[in-house]
Image (cartoon, rainbow, N blue to C red; front, side, top):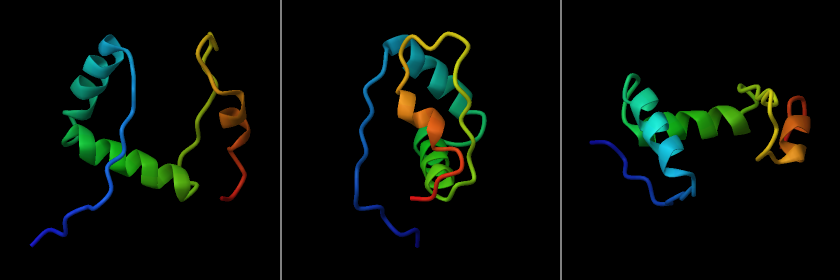
Length: 70
């Protein structure tokens, strides 16, 4: 039997971004499964995030995380 997760993580985003994410994620599994894998890859330092070309809504410290261990 699959072990149930016991923590909920909520993200606020624009409705259009949410639709795009769900459409993209559905190619690989459920949106929750894809988000879970992305979060795990980020904290395991297996994911590299590059700054966007137009950094209008960015968190500047995020781009410094590339080679840091948490």
